[in-house]
Image (cartoon, rainbow, N blue to C red; front, side, top):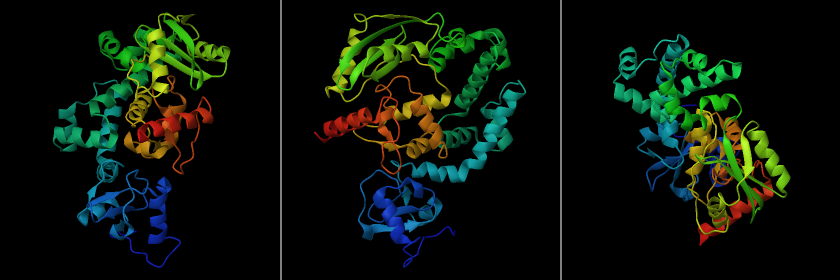
Length: 366
């Protein structure tokens, strides 16, 4: 397909009429096949863009983001078309950066720093950071730490002790590891390896607008939120999540957290800003942070979230990250739906997902 304006008038199967219907439906299946530009705003968007639909007479279709930019249109910030354009331009450069970092970790040498990356790629180090973050959503240093931590966790799962695992992953000392562990693992490395052994978790179960609500927390923050019709399955889910932790009911100590959740579900607060203590991979963290940025009353498709975290082909992985979310409502995975507008899945039942979304839309409408 040429990099110019798409002009297939009179072809109802693959021409502009089909493209316009895709825009009206916000059909994510057409993302990557074309972009549409709006003359009145000077902006081009993906077909799935959640912004208000433009007047048909103002719309022009282009086969690629680059073609739209050559025609003088700028990318839409809301739907991530800028990121798509950047991904098209810089994917090879970012792939080379990742390869250099991974090779350094694989050889157990010190991963290349910015100066080394810039020299190897014959690029300004600041440009290396800017391009990498634009496409991947994180800096080269954050990517390095995520890969190193992933290697460390893999070594633990193989049965290595903490000391063996940290050196196998390329950490020069335990200090650097333990400084990063609480935010990346949600617990100390040893506790992660032992399935939560040594952790002290309290929980409470209360009535809510969505049924019985279990909230569990450590001294660092909330580690589990469950919804259901009866208490026993909720407690069982908590025990399965942390099989070796010391778990006991703490209704009095967790009363403030319970009030915050109930108030949120009753429409008294649009969001919950509470500390969490959960274990997650770097990718899961990125997805969950993106979910927390979705405004109350709005939704995004799995594909839109994948693009927002710099992994446009990872819609299924995004769905997996949503399914593994241990703190429902707090990390609002219910705000992610399928590209066709259907609800998709939800661990606590589609009726609850629908009820949550309806409540949030009504609240936003007011």
